[in-house]
Image (cartoon, rainbow, N blue to C red; front, side, top):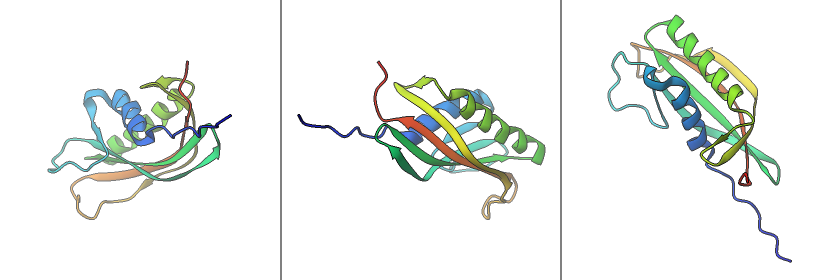
Length: 135
C-alpha cells in the first residue's frame, strides 16, 4: 500500500476569501499593498509562518494589516478580522475545511513607515485548515 501525503491547502488564499466576504465593499482585501494609497480603508494579509501539528492540519500563521484614516475605524476593522476568522471555524470555504483561529496576538498599533496619513493596526493568529478535501 502506498501512502500519499496530503498537500496543504492555500491558506493565504482562503484567509483573503474569508476577510473579503467579511469586509465586502468597506475595504479592499489583498496579499499586496495597493499601488496608490489614498483615504480608502484596506487590508493586507500575509502568511508569516506556521506548522503542521498533524498530518491533516496546516496551521498557517497569518498576519493581517488593517489601514484606515482614524484609530476608531481601524480598531473596528481588526475586530471584524477576529470575528470573521472565529466565525469561519467549522465551515468550508472554496472546498477547504477551516479548523481553527487561535493563538491570537494583537491588535497592536504599528504605524507604517511609508503610509503616514493612515493608521495601521495588526493582528495575527494561527489559521488552521484541513489538508484533506471535505466530502
